[in-house]
Image (cartoon, rainbow, N blue to C red; front, side):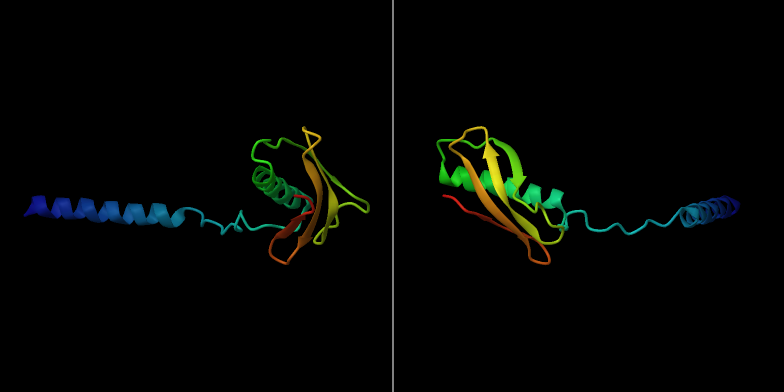
Length: 114
């Protein structure tokens, strides 16, 4: 019987030690969802670029796009609202004007070509 008591005691001590070790650790902080779009210029330009590539491939399947730059027309990008501008592609025949507006939860982008 003493053998069983020793095993039971060891298991109990191990369980208590694990609980104490786990309880002593810091609590994980909830992180905001990283993929929720924000009304920033960076998120707008990422959405514009991603949409441009998809739209341009659809418009000109024989001429793959290579986005060179996104330029905002004055007054420029307006935080939380968006703006209008021009997409420049390495191929001068591609690219074109766009309008980006924040819907309250995501960017809506109109590509005014094709």
